[in-house]
Structures are given as C-alpha cells and as structure tokens.
Length: 224
Ligand SMILES: O=C(CO)[C@H](O)[C@H](O)COP(=O)(O)O
Ligand SMILES: [Fe+2]
Image (cartoon, rainbow, N blue to C red; front, side, top):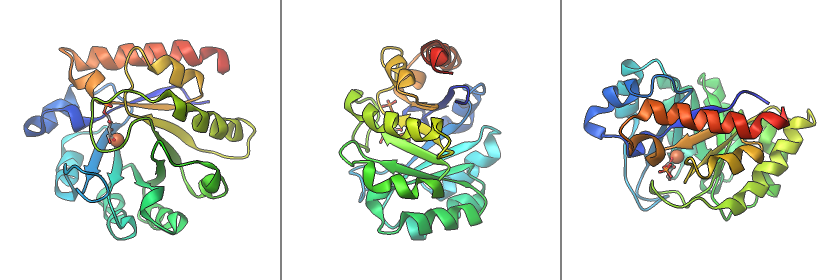
C-alpha cells in the first residue's frame, strides 16, 4: 500500500484566485479538478482552458475528474494538455477500456470512476486497463455533501485484489471526506483521499491537508 495521498478539490476553492488556491495547498499530493458539463451531472464548473491555465500556475500534479458525457471525445485532450491523471465515469461510456487506452496514449494515467449506486463487479475485469479507481462517496455534482459509508465495500473488494498482487491501482475516494470520515475510508484501504470543503472551507487549507494526512496514516498504519 502506498503512503496515503491527499487531493484537495478546487471545487470548494475561490475560482477567481485559482493560482493562489493551488499554492495554499502546495503540500498536497494531487490537485483534484472537477469538470462538470451540466449533462452528466446537474452542475457546470470548468473545462480545458482553465485546466491549461492551472497547469502553468502549479507544479502539483492535476487529478482531473471528468463528470461529463462522451469521455471518448473529451477526455484525451486533458491528457494531451498535461494532466497527471484523467478520470472519467464508467456510466458515461460503453467502452471504458478504449477511453483509458487513449488517455494513456496521450501521456496521462487513466482513472475509472463509479457513482455510489454503480456496482464494481462488472468492471473488475477491466480495472487492469486503469491506473486509478475513483469511488464516489456522494452523488457527483456538488461539494459539501455527506459521506456515504456504504460505498466502502467496493473499495475493500478492489483493495483485496491489489493486495493479492492481481492488480496495480490507486484506490481513490471522493465526496464527504473530512476529519470525521477519513479514518473509516483509510481502514477500508483507500490510497488517495479527495477533500474539497474540508480543505478550502477552513482558515488554513495547508493545515487541513496535514491533519487529514495524519489521520489517514494513523488509520491505515496497521494495514501496511
Ligand atoms: O467530485 C466531486 C463532487 O461531484 C468533488 O470532488 C467532491 O464532492 C469534493 O467535495 P467535498 O469534499 O466537499 O465533498
Ligand atoms: Fe471530484
């Protein structure tokens, strides 16, 4: 198991000050960027031009979470632009492996995300085509929602495959992660924790990142 990673979500940051907001979490492992198209989810955020500007403004690897329709068309340009990891939704395409291939060919890690109600079993076979699995622990679309602990059974199932050596994959969780919920996620075997409101809705985002990381290390320590 890798050392726990923290990925602050700029969904909860001030969009007029994104460079400064990235700088405020310079100790983070990844910077999580929520791309929403108002079709796959009922919200609209930002797209490729903003990601290109962010890439110039920060050295933190960008973890782009595409909550969009037609990822086969729209996901590879994020990889070409220089995003470190490009994640799209299993529910948005009939051929996730083909999209992953195109993302990897364009130079990024490829991630698959599943909504809370989407079972993981139909996707276990194709996870070998991916570098990241993003388990959603809220309905995608908005920050500041409550954590859904029932999704942790999916994380545990995939963690078991990784631990048995059958799979190499970063297991990531997104939604409602804060100082009260991160420990149960860490105990379930999560490698990377996305946190939006728990980082940016505080007076000291850097301290929030440190606190979340310490809690994750403490809770996952006995597993390693
Ligand atoms: O993908 C997302 C929402 O669809 C966000 O990454 C997520 O909700 C982060 O916000 P918070 O930590 O406040 O729940
Ligand atoms: Fe996200």
